[in-house]
Image 1 (spheres, rainbow, N blue to C red):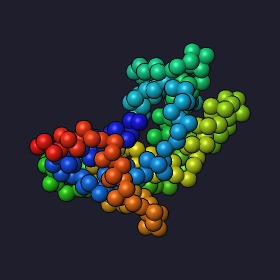
Image 2: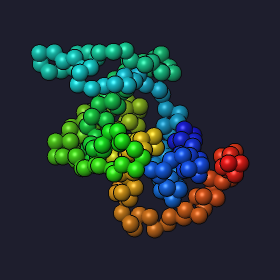
Image 3: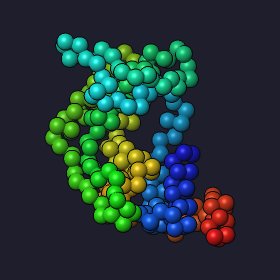
Image 4: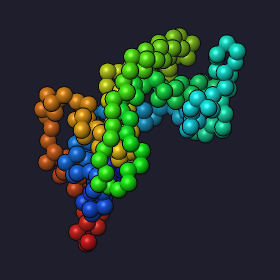
Length: 219
């Protein structure tokens, strides 16, 4: 799976001393959350149309402030032509979700060195929370006309873990956000780590990644 491979590559870089901004323990903790946040049915769900750079400057609105078009091309990854119209709708909505999700963190963009201090602050505003609620209500209303696919979409996005899942997933490839998530204990309370077993996670990593360990031992 993509997420597992990405985290394992990160662990490999930590073991080689190539990633000084992350610790092995923190990466194993992130890896252990795969079982908490993985949604198996999404692996077989229809693919969607994705914009990839949906910002205010790329959205066209009409005189009534309704969205009338998007600037720049969409990347088509639809697997079933009969679903293209629906997937275009849901794909656009998925990008809008990112705008509606509480922007919990704002990190400094480019540090001068790996030893630079981490600068971040919370941006989970009332406006962000209201936007997210409006977005979810819109998706819920679409379920009446778009059926099972939209219902699955809403079920995932409205789950209590969705915000934490989103930031956990984003931190897989964003090292600054990884540092922030470590600072805030991956947005989990201490009691939610009661069953944590990093020793077992390390053993699992070793079994699944003999090539990474061999590379590290050959250095």
